[in-house]
Amino acid sequence: RPQETVSLRLRIMPLHWNQAAEDLLHQILQRTPRPVRDQTEANLLSAAAAWAEDNGLNRIGIQAVIAAYIQITPETLRSELPHQLEALGLDESDYRHLLEA
Image (cartoon, rainbow, N blue to C red; front, top):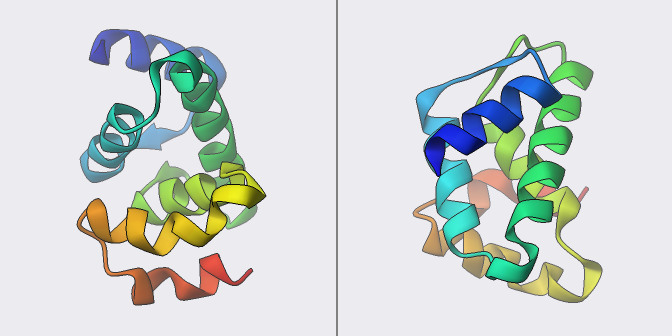
């Protein structure tokens, strides 16, 4: 499965990913229901690349993945995001500015 992600990522965007961002991407996808996992992956890859580019970055890091995760989360599930971030081992308060954007 990781090889498929790398292949898909390289086709979608030329930006480099750091290892922590890749690990976080895989953690999010493992928690995503199978029927929507492939579409979620494509949406996350695209949104993370757009966020990084919009912020003048040439590398995708954890901040870009989290921003993308928040952006693609349906409005009806957004109230669960702080808990989901904590379940991923992240301090929700570090990303409050993204949650409130």
